[in-house]
Length: 175
Image 1 (cartoon, rainbow, N blue to C red):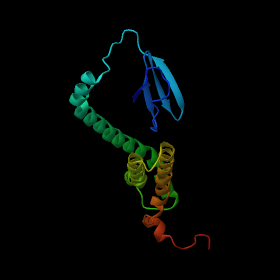
Image 2 (image 1 turned 30 degrees about the vertical axis):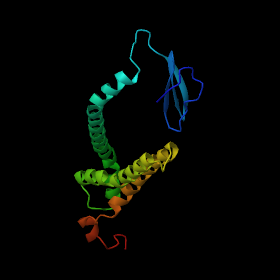
Image 3 (image 1 turned 90 degrees about the vertical axis):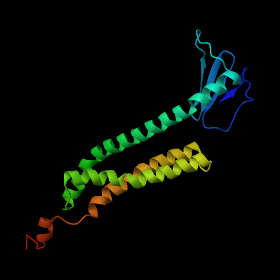
Image 4 (image 1 turned 180 degrees about the horizontal axis):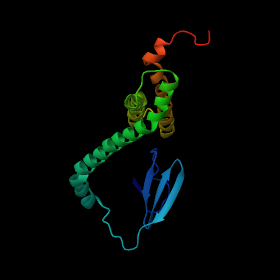
């Protein structure tokens, strides 16, 4: 965030997203370009240190705790939903590979197969926070984390033991 009342460009920063406040409007800059919007007409907000610092100091812990809780709840819900979506393909791979895999087991395997990709993305986010990755490389890490999950989703059922009925039928039925 920066304040440049006349938008002369002196307040640019190397941040991935920059919100620049002017006299009558604000501009948002990112990799996708920029957007300029005027302030609402009936909106009067004190934009000075004596009003903003006490407000942020009072609400910062609550806002950060709420954001952290929403992120954790959202991730848990998305993992449950992705486990449900990936459950059927995992079960089909196990069925056609003659593996001992129930529908419940395929849901658990699908959930577990997503963890290595999630760990990879967590490392990418930490590196982004440390400044070792830029936003484009973080996007690439996000795409790679999907591929890692799919690899584990496909190879997971193949590492299970064979179904007992398939293991007993070792002889060639056409011989």
